[in-house]
Length: 329
Image (cartoon, rainbow, N blue to C red; front, side):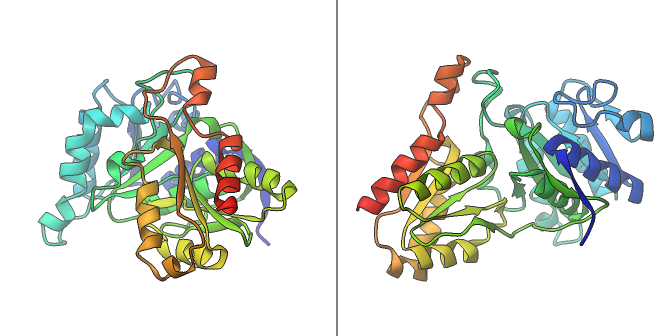
């Protein structure tokens, strides 16, 4: 068995960056305040001192410039890892990300590659209000050419980021802010894997709960509460939204006959609709014993007040309530 120890989600991401930079001189980091300051959430702390300012580059406050430079560097053989201070700020770089990075491989007939990663802290829970607390995965899920990764734990954060950096085309790597300080068992040394592969984190027979990022932890807590009520919930961590592991989801729902999708972003246009459609368009539809149900964020910008903020995104009790309703028919 590989040696492992307990480290935080943030430390796991830093290890993946460190390992990639040590093994490949084409990998470099760029973003606002990622050098001396170590990034908005301290993830890149110490890497400037280890690798120098040529490979850990502080940038001006221009998100479109950051992503544009990353696209250009990737086209000429570098492997940039660009950081947004908050995922919300990706809105300022959408042209470079969605119209350039995502499309150039196709527009040049496969002769160009854009091996870049865009890292971004995402989600609510820190009191940072409407412009710094959104869950943006559904903004990007409609863009062919982008991979979208949302790990829920430290081990996956390290392995998936390693895989993302090695990928020949652009990956958006969304890190939930509330996960940075959470700890988990992480292997020593470099390892890679998981892109396009969901995992069953809790097996069950009565209802499939499909989720990602911070919602995985709430779903697992809900599964524990449901167990006390005699309901055996299966929890699936999607891990990557693009590519989506449809077969694991379909297989689970074919077994349980019920689907509950949980995500933090608002219900309307949320990625949960894609998962619901995946099931209803598959062979699993014949096994459904109840309508598909979604638990998602409310249709409102995220407030800064802690209680209001908590109230507009799904909590454990919301998941439990929805699962009980599904079983009740």
